[in-house]
Image 1 (cartoon, rainbow, N blue to C red):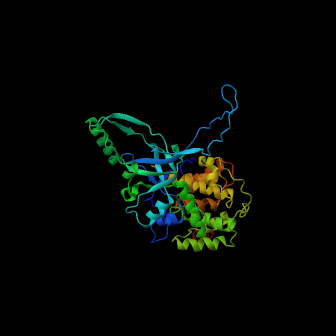
Image 2 (cartoon, rainbow, N blue to C red; image 1 turned 45 degrees about the horizontal axis):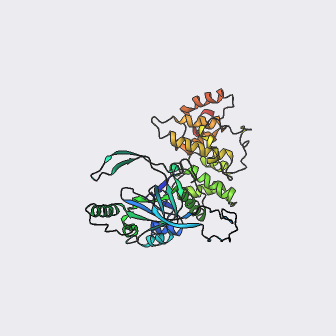
Image 3 (spheres, one colour; image 1 turned 90 degrees about the horizontal axis):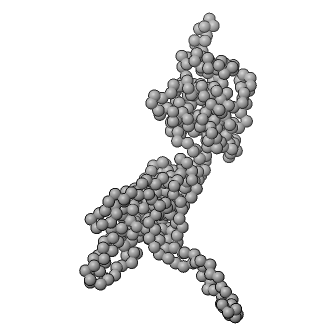
Length: 410
């Protein structure tokens, strides 16, 4: 199974992160079935057993055309069979994918639906410690946690869930009869002990994070939005809107005016670009942004001051310039740092921008859009000294109140 660092995990069906993409009034399972997103049942090993139906390949057989004495024998064509059906318990399977038939039924009603699972599941041999024995002499096992990136996909034709307690009771009853010399009473096949889906709590229904990402991308594309892969949309709406404007302008080739579009979409979100930050936001939306615009050449982008940029692929998009990609990375960095105790001062964020070769009011505007806070005049001396230490030209990072400027000039 493919592994993907932070994205590689199973998400509970009840997780609200994906449900924002679901239209109101439609059931979760019905929506996911409509969008062809697989749903998995997490196997609770204390309550359920997995009974699998497999096709086991046959070992190749060598056919001799002569006997030991060297006499020719008639060649018999082997039967055209390369596998045999096998039924067995699969105790290592931790997640099972609902079959299309069960999925369709469950989308309408979970009551009395006996689920079947097809295509395969996710498995790993679980490490456990033997902590003793129960009253019947059976091992009591304490299992270790299993991380999703340790799981691998297993294939089988189909599978069902068995009520572990009912199956164990039937085995005990059969054994007790035989121990008392009453003969083997036999027992029903495993299928008799299968459980219905209404016996599986919603908390044990999961979706794969990778499938959710594909779902988000598909829904957002239908809605005319790019798939925003970061967690700070609500905290940094200005950065989110810059991403969407760049996607529309450079990927979809929509003839939008970035400044007007950003202003209009911000209003829909109840957000307003403050302190003329709309100017910088609109500028960095463009792929062909002019770094010399304003006051001379500002130098090439320097990314060495941000450790998270080592994961550059996470922030690189065909519709975004390197400068805008760096803004996304810096927003991610600040989103994490600002949650620590104590949180870093705002000038640390501004210094990251200055070190990368952002300059002037760009720094103040982007600091505001990322943090939600404005740089103050008391921050200027420290930032000016920082720029001089870098042997670069100082450009004011915050605007000067026109009334104060006019008063000085008089």
